[in-house]
Length: 275
Image 1 (cartoon, one colour):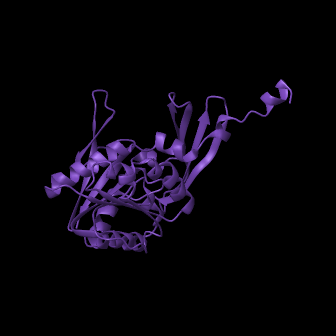
Image 2 (cartoon, rainbow, N blue to C red):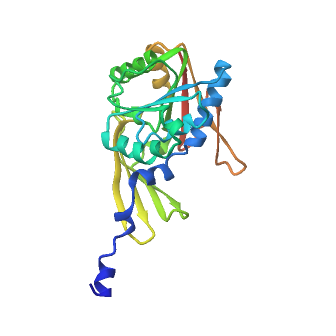
Image 3 (cartoon, rainbow, N blue to C red):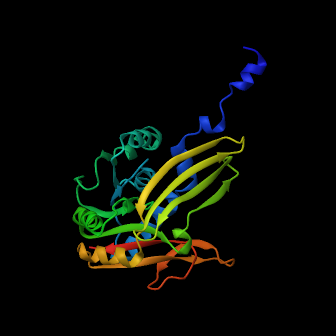
């Protein structure tokens, strides 16, 4: 093959990219997440949480991070997609020490039917539960979460909102270290139903693009709706954890209870519900 043809057939960065790896680099920070989960649990229950269930676990990175806390810690990940679970087994669970691997269990199942031993703490992050687009469906899922917890268990969810959450727009974030730009694309929003369709694209420094690496069709739930449904599902109480600000007014990654929030254009928060 001539040098000219060899260059012509060189794969692009987009063709070589692993979308799951890109997602973790741009969306997730499991070290901070697990620290928040554990610290919050201990603050409320005055004891450590040992058994963790990660619904819609995807690559199960959070579950893997959970068991790194020590030999007493166990994690169960539940996801309906066999391909992403296989990726997680090969690239995340498989990279753990053997003694840690034994304490991570991945289950291919619908979160509405999965049966697991009672857990201290259950989390549904990355807005994944937004797939439940009616009050009845979401209440039913919250009841499943309630039943999966031990008597003093806690349920954690995240959510986003603000006026910009209801716009059809694109937000780009450059990750120079990794050579790509993350694009969050809110492609469609219906204010009558709060239906929202979103995509994640990745653009690379060689000009190639990975379009619609991930796509979502959700209902954009509000904080009061979620807290009401958690109460209807049986949780005794819930609290919203709001992110603090640094000197420049940007988020500082520290979330604390807040019963009002702030009128930001765009925000991300957590809700912690007590059984």
